[in-house]
Image (cartoon, rainbow, N blue to C red):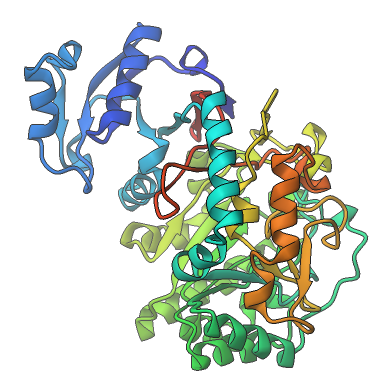
Length: 463
């Protein structure tokens, strides 16, 4: 469930705020000003915080005098007499893992987005036009800084998720050939690349029968990091598990829970037990050989997180969560897939991300630094979303006919950026709610990404 502001937090009581930085102080102040029925008992020291003196200094210098009675806590285990923990979204990744290890699931994630002014939009467009296009620094930045590319080794899938637009796709579904994959990796390495993601915007990488051969090849050729997202259905295959443990750096497994009925309702197939069996074997083998692969459960929740983690089917995995071998990434907010998915597709506490009156004057960050290689070698700027087809006006070239280094920020890529600045957005971008404006502050080496407008969104995962 999402609430748009603190007034709609569906629970009163006592709260702790995670972190000691400015965002944490702002969150606490919002609670104090807007929710008199919620008491901020203290702040939890984050690993990234320098010391306890930060907060005390702020109190002493009257920067936040209203919190002079709260306590600082370093150990979450010592927290007593509280109803929930509020976590600023900027430190949510660290905080969620920390909470998970201690079996704590009663928390809110507060997404305090930065405001983007009209002046910033205008200046950003000028900088993008000047630095990226006229001075041709886009290619230099991408190949020296980003050094990552998404490679769609398969657009086939063995699930039918309610929040995915796969059913609306008109594209043929197929796997990337091993020769083409080798060519992509070779050219990417020649461009100073180091990380490859095998996660397509439609499909599952494990469905590719050449998955094992491809990850071994990429690693042996010199790719430093391989990451992917999967539904995990084929982890029951021992060969796939061994290849994952040996060659993959990060793996995200998407699922709602291991309850058979809920899994089939949301993922459209009766494979919940098979996923649980494969994942458990993967974790056991990971522990035995001390594999470095980072395994994350991307929970697409239809029920509160604390309920899902209390399921009997989840109990075998709790010890791995506690030790950090299995990380959690809960999600209840789904996007609209460029207008293809609606509220009718949401189940339980899922909700659809709304971006009303969103100004898209600045090109999206995804067309600036997230290119994808489709299974036939076509290069597409956005690796995340499409409207009915990946073969649209975001296609910028074919790696079979032109070198990758000439395609990224090449003639067609620059043309799309120019058109966007002029008000002509690519078709899939017009209704997309994943839009993130890409802003440049000053010189081309100083970038900052400012997302959307201030909304004060809150994601809460407990009942």
